[in-house]
Image (cartoon, rainbow, N blue to C red; front, side):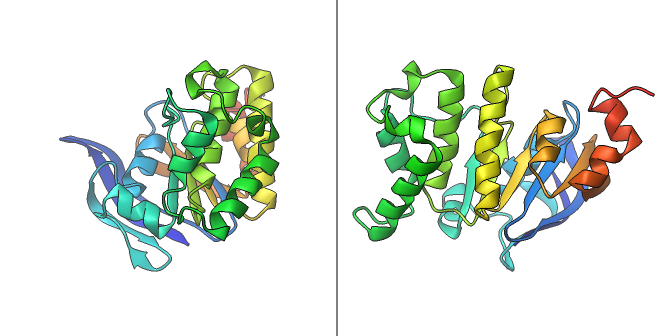
Length: 237
């Protein structure tokens, strides 16, 4: 569904991504892991059209998309859940969700079905649909951010650090919802520093260091890898 070939990108004259090639098949959850500054979030921003691609190509469902503006990419079926959550803080839960659904026609049957799906996956949000986003807890805001991303009925979701800044019990709650999405067949490219949870809820993973892929494979194999256990899972010899 999504494929990058020799992807290079960065910020101004600063090169961050140095020739990454990877793919995400339909229905897969694929995670990008690595330390701070490895380039994980830059990958999502390049795919989502937020920063320019200096070299390489990105394909989505067989169509080349690098260079397209973010709003066009959303209409094609890509949804980014950014690290800062991308919420409209002075608006209610329901208003945020409706803004996330701009790809769908207001009043359409699909919009109503999508809203009901979101309420089913995030039942706590339904009881708070008239609450302003800024008054919610961090965990509730993150659930709303993911729910808002779902409202565009995306073909693939790009999630950037969904557990950042959350207490452990809330991290568990967020990843339980991601696991529900996985079981529903939602395609996800996940950037996450919590390697244990990221590998538990994904099918495959890529390990990034300094803008390059240094390791890849099925999540179970990565969890068993000595380098991963030592550097990211805290397992000592």
